[in-house]
Length: 257
Image 1 (cartoon, rainbow, N blue to C red):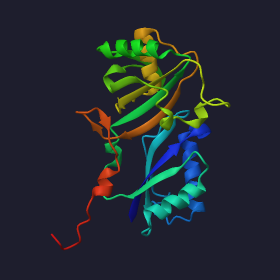
Image 2 (cartoon, rainbow, N blue to C red):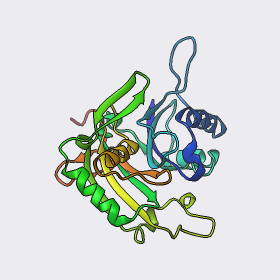
Image 3 (tube, rainbow, N blue to C red):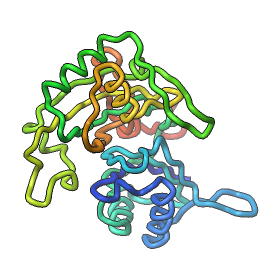
Image 4 (cartoon, rainbow, N blue to C red):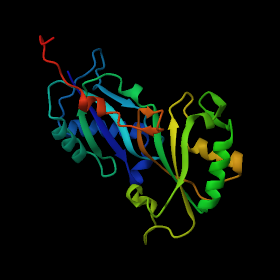
């Protein structure tokens, strides 16, 4: 069985797609593209698809990952094109790599998030960020399926800064702009790196922490986009490419050892 790892996006209005909705759309795309899927055994066989750390509903993403198992060998790039053509615009398959190593999910150690705060002055945001980073712990509460939980957001954040909105156009989601172009009112854009812990700390939890430490409460809901996720470089605090190991892996021919 050949395994292919895919990177896909949730852009524009498709950021409101739930993970269950994406699963249904993706399985339809597999059938439409006539992908030779491998199936699980048992009375109700299912296509072998493994999803890894999906972004919450309402959040945009440039770095979602999944793995599929195929019944026969296919060219990864050809497969990517067929699947991308079979999905709606906004759910875009942007990369396909043959899986040559194990442990993709374990490599997703942290995420890079961009948070757009319309109506917030950047200088005010910088003051709030400084207060958050100076704190040893920043506890917030969130309702989960097991009830209200209290957890520390500060320990999960390895990097948090206010970035220049003018120089951030390359990462901007066109759907986050007004009908006549970018919003011209006050706007602060945060860039943060968050470890994947249990329970998971989400960008909205960090915003709750900024409110708790510095009384920063955006007047409108924040626009959140995941820019990357993967292994965390502890020394530099950056998130690296989780598919690099598969690209770099060298297949050793049988009997050559």
